[in-house]
Image (cartoon, rainbow, N blue to C red; front, side):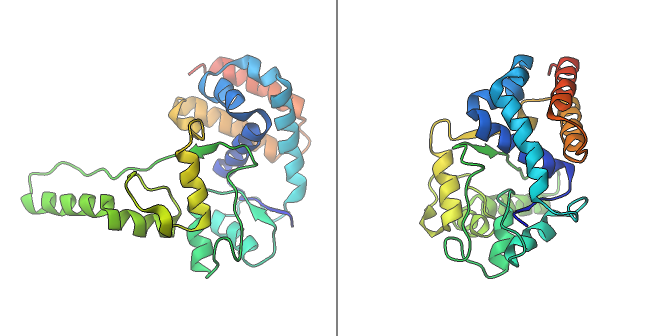
Amino acid sequence: MPFAQTGIAFFEEFVFNEVLLASGGLPLYQQFIRDHDGAAIDSPEFVAATEAYARLRGYTDPGMPGRNWTDTANLVINGDAGFILNGDWANAAFTSAGLVAGTDYECNIGFASHVMVMGSDALVFPTSGDAELMQAQDLLAATAISLEGQINFNSVKGSVPVRTDVDTSALNSCLAKAVAFVGTEGGATPWPSYYNSPERNLAVRDLITGFWNTPSMTAEQFRAQLKSTNAQYPN
């Protein structure tokens, strides 16, 4: 199959956002995702994005619904699919399979949109009066943020180091592309949850996954539902 898609709502939204970026660039993404401007939905670029998103269904396979991302990645790793659209964590799957970026496979940031959608994780420790526990917490935090810890962890997971003084020359070609995007003005933008309330996020995601999994729904019907949801959840 040309396109290996993960059959989970998060990843269906993931793909839609990348198609939106490819169609309208960062301005359209921010107009809808960040500014919640309903006029964006009527723009030619947004119309084109919804139609392109619908066409992508025809490039995947009947086994998609409910399939997790690791099994989806394995379709590409094993040569059963052409490409997968995923996050940096997929790097670990390809590396664990013994594949080398730039030699055994290639990668790109989205659909040639020249913008990378970014998220972040955090280590959060509960407060404690236990001196030994606090010392252990400090050690874990120091290890995670150390130069050695950053390069070792990110080389495997595929994420961009949080420190700017890390020597990134040891990162594979895929990670090098991501680092370059982060270092370019306008090269990265936050994931929608950084801009929206949980209620809006879930409502929009439900519409996207409903559209993806309902081939009989037209792109026009989907946009009409988005307009209604956009008005209902302004934040």
